[in-house]
Amino acid sequence: MNDDADPGLEAIFRRLIGATGPISVAHYMAEANTHYYNRADPLGVAGDFITAPEISQMFGEMIGLWLADQWQRAGKPSPCHYLEFGPGRGTLASDALRAAGQFGFRPQVHLIEGSAQLRFEQRSRLPEAIWHDGLDSVPRQGPLLIVANEFLDALPVRQLVRAEHGWRERVVVHNGERFLPVAGARPMDSAVPAAFGDSPPGTILETCPAASGMAFEIATRLKAQGGTALFIDYGYAAPQTGSTLQAVRAHQKVDPFVDPGLADLTAWVDFAQLKQIALAGDVDCLGPVGQGDWLIALGIAGRAAALARTEPTQAQALSAALGRLVSPDEMGALFKVLAYRGSGWPQGEGFGGL
Ligand code: SAH
Image 1 (cartoon, helix red, strand yellow):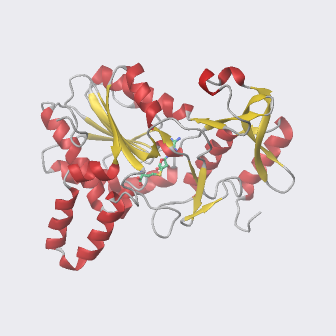
Image 2 (tube, rainbow, N blue to C red):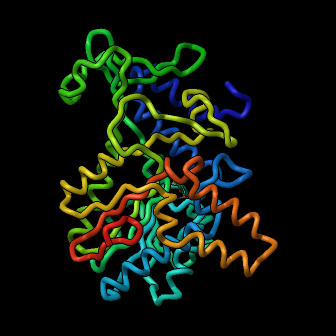
Image 3 (spheres, rainbow, N blue to C red):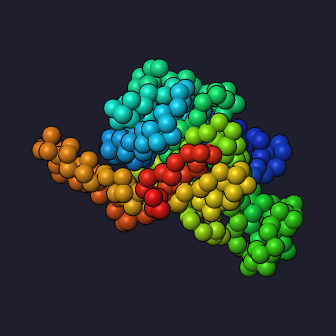
């Protein structure tokens, strides 16, 4: 165990596994992340990882302009709610709402955030916001303009692994020295789609029931009360096999099964599944498109040039930030943007087909 590993969570997991047997990878990831996000602010250069809104104000501004455009073309409905899932430090929301406010878009602000520590950070930037534990308490009157940036990737994934004699859930044991993922004892063949039945031993199928459930709830709300949702995350556009679970600490990839609760655990978002859910929830789905293409279509290069004219000393930093956000070698291609559109809402900019 690392010196500053939290003995709390490690001890809890060891006791739980000792008393009731191995825990699922999903259970492990859920507890580890709850612990992680409540421990400290993980974002930024001094933290563990940097997200797009923390790279540059331009990211949140582009989202704000996108939302204001949607709202205007929908006939400026009032009341109207901005709702963000997992807002981190509140940077994206404050940049987006400042940019959107120039077009008269001043929605009520609702934030769904699990971490008390991050709620505190968000309150300093968004004092007027209303916090929620989930969608249930979010108003049912008036359209919802929803944003989730790097939120779905933090939700727990369930993994099934093809063992020698059939499919098993991937579970976590402790071998006396460390935590390890292994194939569980209970047969799980009935949970595997027929197309994967004959996969070779070692194949891993990863799903994210929490993300699927959340996306379906969002679709249901958009269908009932109108509005739109933007999901921005890293992930894959077509189904694939294999574990994508990863841990990042101090900007380095580390072993997800060492020091639980001290690193950010994420997994790739399955955008094909988000499209399926839109179909099931009867809302239109736009994308996914690469984050780079989307931001460029929205005019981020022009915004960078305008900012550089106002602050010439920042020109180099702005160009570097622009590169990180849009270049296919950085966040531009791996990160994707997908939108849900409630009935009667306009086609969103940046997805083609206008
Ligand atoms: N969107 C922000 C932060 C991304 S980090 C940004 O782009 O900078 C993930 C965010 O989701 C954090 O705010 C974290 O506390 C929150 N989060 C993770 N799992 C959650 C859950 N199950 N319920 C609510 N919030 C969660």
